[in-house]
Structure formats: C-alpha cells, structure tokens
Image (cartoon, rainbow, N blue to C red):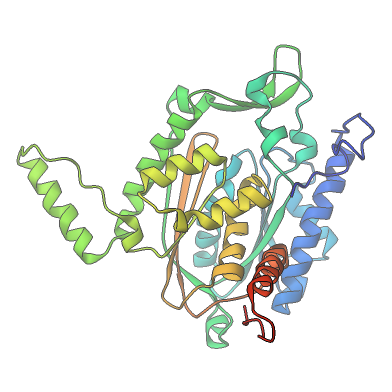
Length: 369
C-alpha cells in the first residue's frame, strides 16, 4: 500500500506536482485533523481538555505554526501551552517525548497531546540527483496523535496503557560529518530536496551505539548488569577481553524501530542481536506504509497492540534516528494487558481471518482474533 497526497500523486496532479504552501496546508490539515479527531473520539476528551500541545513536522514549518493550525481547527483553549518542533527528521517522534515529559513534570496533572506528521508536498523533490530521491521513493503520508498525562485518574480508571521508565537522547551535530550527512536544501540546478549522504548509515550507527549505551541500565536484567560490571572491571585492570555486548531481548519484550529502510532495519537488527520475530512490527510498517518519518514508531505501536498484543509488565523499546545526527530511545512498560484494534491495521486482521477460514475444515468456527 502506498499513500501520497493529491498534490503530488501521479494520477491526481496531472503530471505537474504542486509543492506550494496552500497545497501543503491542505495535506497537513487532512492528516493531522484525522489523527486528532480519532484520538478525541477514542478517549472521550474534548479539545478543551488538552493543556499541552506539541506538533512535529521536519520540512513544513508555516507561520502561524502547525500547533496554531491544530489549536484553530479544534478550537482549543486560549491558555494552552503549544509548541512546534521542526527540522529534526525521523527521530522527532521519539525525541519529542523528552519535551513532553519535562512539561508534565513542570505542570503535573495535565493532559499533553503529541501530533506528528511529515509533509510530502513540501518534501517532494523535482530534480534528478539520486542522493535526494529517497523521500520520493520511500516516504509516504501518515500522521499520529498520542495522549500523555501524569494524572492519576487515567491509571485509576484502568485506561492508562504505559508508563515511561527510561529515555535517552544523543546528538552528534558537533561533528561536521554527522551534521552534513542528511541535509535539506537545493541541488546544483536549484531543485530543493533532502540530501542523503553515503555516510548516513555509518553516522546513524555511531549515534545509535551511544544512545544504547546510555539507555542500557533501564533495559538490562540484574544478571546482565552484573556481567557488564565484571567486564568493565576486567578491562580496567588491563585484561584483554572483548567489550561485553548484552542480548537486549532478554530484558525487553518488544522493539519498535524506525523503519527508515530495509537495509537500515537489517543493520539495527544485527547490532542489537534481534531475531526476525522482534522486527515484525517495524518491517510490517515499512511493507504496508513505507517510511512515515516521525510517525513511524507510533504506527509500530499500533501494529503491536492490534496484531500481537501486549501483556502487563512487558517492556517496549521505541527507537528513532534522524538528521543531525540525533537518536532517541524510550523504554515503556505496559501497566495492563493491551489488545486494542486500530483502524490503520484492521486490514491485517481481515487478512489473518481470511487465511484462517481458508485452512479450516468444513463445519468449524473460526477462532477469535
């Protein structure tokens, strides 16, 4: 499945992509409007119940801001704290949790709404330089809205899903190679697009390694922590032993990795020593929707809940890498069993049910999904 806005869809734009600000606004309003409406319907909240609003988009940064666009469309309160984060690439959806966490600590008991998308109208590249064609070929339209709160009433009512039990953020922009490897700007002919350097995978691996070392204590079992400490002491004493590399899957049940591309997922899978089962949510997003930029890991969350299910006490690693280079890692812990069905993945359940019915002998009822 592929999703493109009408402004650049080959069958709808009549061969002339429209990348103007008006077309970008139409795409943005459609994507964010649908995501926020769905969240308000599911939670039973009104737009006036939102105290903090954070919007995300890397390329499209209008004036008034995207946060103002959402506040205007849904008639939010005049005292709402609103922020927009731009230019941070695919990592934005994960890194933004840091900001919301800090805002909730400063404003306890409030409801914070995170709304994320990428604007393909403005990101579309009309030139022919191969290093700038990745967005056109891989990135697709999508949006997500997430409600976060530290109010006790959500857990008391049994409606809270997760608690944040660890987070790490690393940025390597001080190195020129990292800063320039992903770049939005004009090519030699003046066509604007996102440049992806040949060293982008190397730089992404470097920042990912730093982030995983930082978040490690929140992921490892006590046995792994002991092994890591012994290894550290051995190396301090000059013993020639390899650096300890833990099996992260022992302490974390689910991995939600930004689906930047098949090769990117292969590299992260190998680096974290994960089996293919752990990669299922990320590969499913890439297969069905492509790279949805900062919304991608939230789509993997929805896949996990809809198609696999989450048990109380399960730990979930959410990981995103973006321009800069930047890497964000969040560790979530489920506070209850979760098997919510999200519309975006309902087609997978239909396919699974159809497959089950095809294999059943006559007279048998299909099992409940």
